[in-house]
Length: 139
Image (tube, helix red, strand yellow):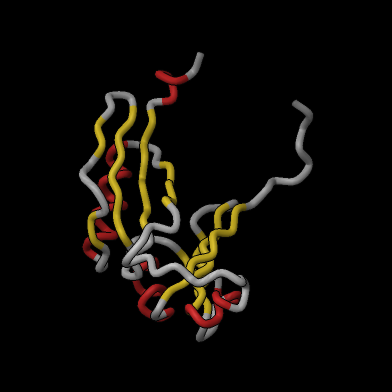
């Protein structure tokens, strides 16, 4: 495969009811806000150098789509999976999410070379946190 001159980024846009509550939740679990892209209707959460979570107040989010906006407390619009460096990091992130007002999304998943837990943010968006033993999956 040819070298890629541009490091592609992922911007995940989600509708939220309360932008301030979302800002509080995601900073409490350890992520930073990018103030250049935050306002009364938007929270820009930096997950990593290449992953950005854009939390848009529901009415603002609706301006970007012709479809109805999903109510994540009633249906699952996406499963957002974040990798972790270790099992401990999985537990730490999910425990912080639960302490910050999130709720469990499912039972922990133990697959030997993979371990995962999940949480719902205050708006019901489903986040998975997964550790995988890379040596077990390399061929």
